[in-house]
Image 1 (cartoon, rainbow, N blue to C red):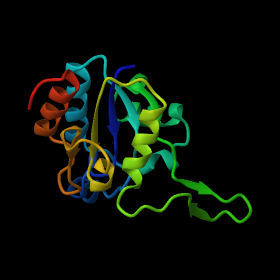
Image 2: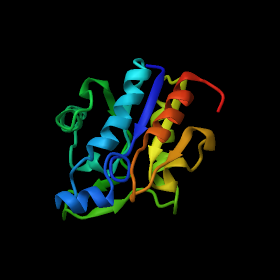
Image 3: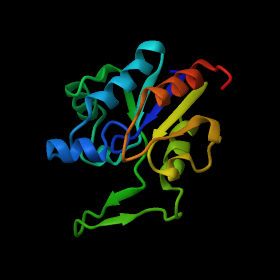
Image 4: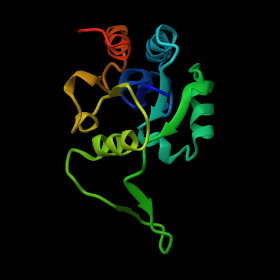
Length: 166
């Protein structure tokens, strides 16, 4: 596994106008999904690591892969999820922060995953700037909650994963 796509869901595979139109916050926009699929088709070696907060709902790789598959994404490409910086306190069910570093949590989760895995190239798709914290800005593609992942973003992701100059 050498080429990895770190995937957020909200603001990447969905967007505010689409979620409002279908009246569901957990929906994925087919146009955003098509943009992701264009990356997966163009770079068949690329694998997905879920960095989205959706990994708190779909707690295993298999459940997350199945959820993506139901939306038209090749679930077999999901190979992992970034470590959780939040954990459930079993005594009273509260959620506590195991690390509090303002504006850098998702980027640190990605770094932690990279430190444990052999990766040649990677790209981060996220609408939140904290995902890029601590990473080369060239590998971070910031989408938006207003639009989600576009074909232009996808073209950049393809170039990054292929090691092409931008």
